Amino acid sequence: MTIPLSEVKKRLDSLNDSYHKNKSTVVSEELELKEKGEQDDKARRNLTFHFVWGFFGLIIGCFLFVLWYNHHAIDWIKTLNTQGLSDAAASVKLLELDKVLSVIIGALGTSLGFIIGYYFKEKKG
Image 1 (cartoon, rainbow, N blue to C red):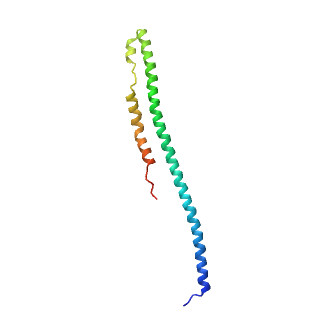
Image 2 (tube, rainbow, N blue to C red):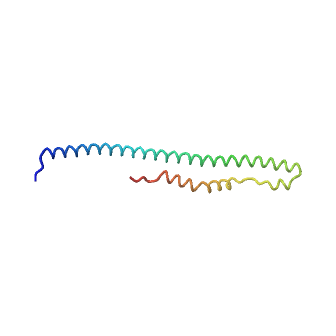
Image 3 (cartoon, rainbow, N blue to C red):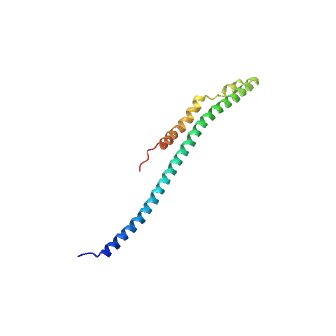
């Protein structure tokens, strides 16, 4: 049982065509996966950048808020004392920066750790 040479040539040509079609498909899929990986890296970088800057901006904002609040609270205490309302003046509480920062860091510290861990996540593939 021999196969004619023309049949072998047809099969080889068919396999060659199939190979080239598959090769172009594989190349396009590889390019698409590479672009998705680059988009993922860019999204990861942007997320981390904005969260970290926002976190430190919030810390600076807390510092400024504590200064502003305490300044106005002291003025209010002075006003209450001059009006003879020393009991009311004693009930006005000043903010402590370490306690305010403790609340902010406690609330967002876990998220910050997750975001930074996500940024440095090892890619597989």
